[in-house]
Image 1 (cartoon, rainbow, N blue to C red):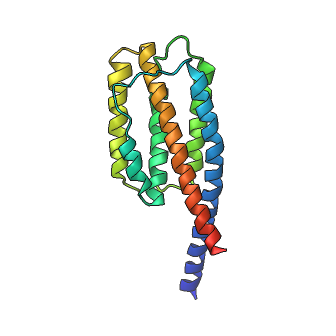
Image 2 (cartoon, rainbow, N blue to C red; image 1 turned 60 degrees about the vertical axis):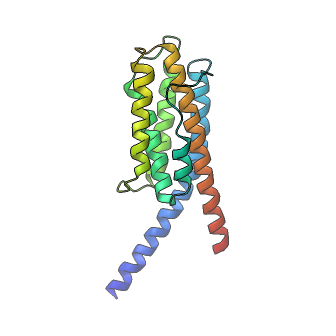
Image 3 (cartoon, rainbow, N blue to C red; image 1 turned 30 degrees about the vertical axis):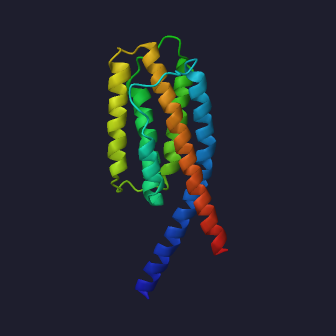
Length: 186
C-alpha cells in the first residue's frame, strides 16, 4: 500500500505541474507582449540594416521539432541570455530611457519566472549551447567592437525584438499543441 500511495502522489504531482505550467504559459503571452512593446519604445528607431551576426533561424527551426521540455528550456535560456545582454552591458546610448530599460528587464524576469514552473534545470540542450555562442558573437561584433555605439545597440535591439517574436511564436505553438492534447483527453 505504501508503494501505491507513493505512485498516487507522483501522478498527482505530475498533473499539478502540467496544470501550473499551462497557467504559466498563459501568463507568458501577456508578459511577452509587454516586452515587445518595451523594446519598441526603448531607444527609438530600430536598425533596418543587416546585423554583423546572422539571426539563428535554423536553430529555431530545429528546436520546434524537439520535445516540449527542450523547447521550454530553450525559451527560458534565450530569455536569460537577453536579460544578461542588457543587464551586464550597460553602455546604452544616452538617448535611451533608463526607466524603459528597467521595465524591460523586469518584464524579462517575469517571463523567466513563469517558465521556471515548466522547466527542469537538468535539461542539457545542444541548441542552448549554440544559442550561447550566438549571443557571445553578437555582443562581440556589435557593442564591444564599437565601444557601445548607438548604431550597434540598435542592431542588438533589432535582434532582441526578432528573438522575442520567435520565442512568442514558439510558446504559442507549444500552447496550441497542449490545447489539442487536452481537448483529445476530454
